[in-house]
Length: 123
Image (tube, rainbow, N blue to C red):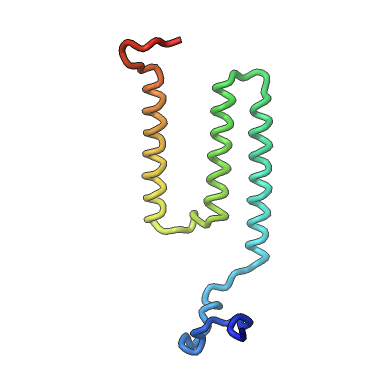
């Protein structure tokens, strides 16, 4: 039971200097960043809702605007909360491949929307 009450790592004597203080984190700076990201997410969601009710745009333009805002929102969350902005080249390479193949799949889907097999009835 006494093992559960300790807050120090089990191998603390083997480490010498505590590894907990090698990368000091300014909590106030981190909290400020989280608040900024939260405000940005709330603004992005509000902008998406407003874009869906715009009277002078047709539906494809509204969807395109909402998707642009959603992608920007995802970049803000992934970049700042998940710390992907400060990651290594490998992470960026994987993200670039993911974006490339996702765009390819979307392109193939749009390209094949009117491609029906021979002999099928379309309405």
